[in-house]
Amino acid sequence: MSVSQVHQPNIDTKKSDKNLKLLFPKQAECSYVSCYCEENVWKLCQDVSLRVPEELDRCFVVFISNPCRTVPLWKQRAGREEDRLVIWDYHVIFLYSIDLKSCLVYDLDSELPFPTFFHKYVTETFRTDQVLKSDFHRFFRVVPGKYFLQHFSSDRRHMKRPDGSWIKPPPPYSAISASASSHNLDEYINMDADIGPGQVFNLTEFVQRFYKIEK
Image 1 (tube, rainbow, N blue to C red):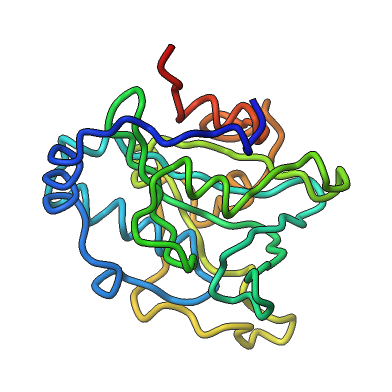
Image 2 (tube, rainbow, N blue to C red):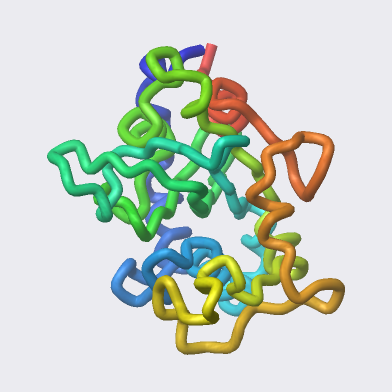
């Protein structure tokens, strides 16, 4: 199924609205620091775990990258042209899977609504790989939110220049550290399906994983 073939899901609006009010703060209330998308999403997972931990099993963290570290995404706030296209080395988003047919995407760097229904986010942000050179094809490492919250670590070394100065100012809180490692970010960005946590999908597989068409 190509991205252009995604249709509007049948969502129980009352159910999703109720869950959203319980689960997530408004975008302006979220922890956000530019260029630290992995930490922004970790903070969102932490927020869910503190307020409604029983819902964390419905939450997923998605790292988007490829072997060339060149992934085009549209509708990004950092984009300068009308279509807001940015080519990131990697990006991270948060998914809330309401049920087998419904999923919401939370992207703090997107111009799309917060959250956005999965079908709309995919169509407008990823479009399709069919017209892109293979170096720009997107791959997706999907990690359960609970696992990510417990095991992710970053000492922020990737945001420092050789002289030790910051490329972008870091978040005001201490670096995220798990007991087993002080820095494992590269394991999440790596798109080798045989290495690292979670599962790796191409774009078509990713859509099929989180969007079920009723037959």
